[in-house]
Amino acid sequence: MPHRFYAPALDAEADRWALGGDEARHLSRVLRLGAGAEVRVFNGRGLERAAVVDLITGGEVVLRLGAALPAARELPFPLTLVQALLKGDAMDAVVRDATMLGVTSIQPMSTGRGEVPAASMAKGGRRGRWQRIAVSSAKQCGRAVVPDVREPIALSEALTRAQPGLLVFLTEPSSRAGAGRLGDLTPPRDEAAVFVGPEGGWTEEEIAAAAAAGAHLVTLGERTLRADAAALVALPVLLYAWGVL
Amino acid sequence: MPHRFYAPALDAEADRWALGGDEARHLSRVLRLGAGAEVRVFNGRGLERAAVVDLITGGEVVLRLGAALPAARELPFPLTLVQALLKGDAMDAVVRDATMLGVTSIQPMSTGRGEVPAASMAKGGRRGRWQRIAVSSAKQCGRAVVPDVREPIALSEALTRAQPGLLVFLTEPSSRAGAGRLGDLTPPRDEAAVFVGPEGGWTEEEIAAAAAAGAHLVTLGERTLRADAAALVALPVLLYAWGVL
Image 1 (cartoon, each protein chain N blue to C red):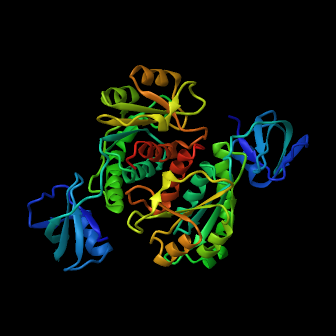
Image 2: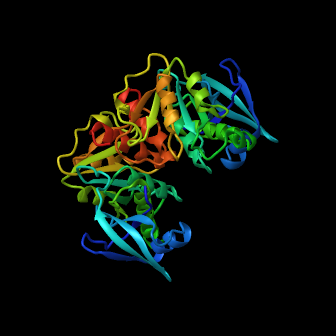
Image 3: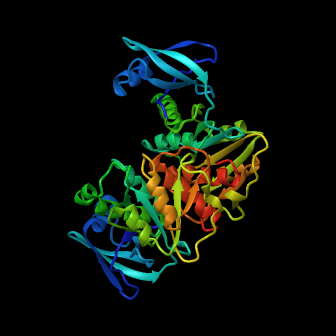
């Protein structure tokens, strides 16, 4: 598999393309590719093209573009991971892994028991960092689509925005009698959003709000999962159960 | 949930128990628990008991032991993760997550395209480190059983040792026509081992050796998974398909 580079403005018609910034630096300095090297470029929205390095000059790499390539298969419906903000760099791993698993967008969310205020997140430029991680993960796993990482919002707003799609609300085994099994959900007709809570769990009010919004409350077996591992465990099971892994 | 401490020699009969070393330090210095604090202790082989801190003295913590407690449910059959050695600290995360998901042992394995020689692993004390990570993960996720982390061995020996259980051999989507789907495997009658390859993938000879040993070659959908994420994606799907997640 040739190395892949991200060119968000890439179109299907251009004959040549100039990579700049990090992508150019990565190609020429880190990977030390030279003129004649075969690579691929993708635009993060599903277009991927073959390319050959033509010229490396200063901070820029000029590519000769070839045919459009069949990209890795995407999910047949949009899937959003609505993830409660996590401490430290735990969110980095969630963004990386959710991208690998095929989600189309990642919505960070503040919750009652989350220990990370959304405001401090916005200030710290975390969203930009996560978007770069999503790009990097897409490059690595062969996806030509980069998930959109959104600005953090509150759970109540996330519930509203996910309408009228299928809302999947992951709860802890102990938190609610009557929650269904994750794998028993039928696939969405149009789109789906999976809500994963914070380390401290959902509050009773949040669970009630999700139920009131029409979300399907589900549990994932009896195991206690770390908050930063819940999405990576739940998504494969859900995608497998839906026949789209 | 009270804090849990690991006491490998703990039995069901003792009335009092002395914690030493890291466990004592963690209780008294890190968590700053004092006399009267309610905790739990477990022996890593399924026994878990209630306890109350009685006395903290020097580097030792003396507990008064209470009733045996129902431990988190374990898988109904032994499950070994046979994981190709990974670079850097990627193996740490695999051990941590596999423990959370309920495996009963972890067998590190050297392979043709693995970039980490088993010999250098043995020298570096990595096995001891992974065993401590397994203990720590079991404490965190409520398991009273700590998976056994074994010394690294070669794939050929790992295939032999996993006999006569069910051998599940995870291959990349492109590597082999005719591989089955992971989720279509029927549950093991007695025990199972899941083989996960290195970053560079299996060699043709290794795939042939696995097939000759009676392993079920399976793929996990069409996605390209990072080597350090493959186990964490495959295990939930397999356990879900087997009805034991």
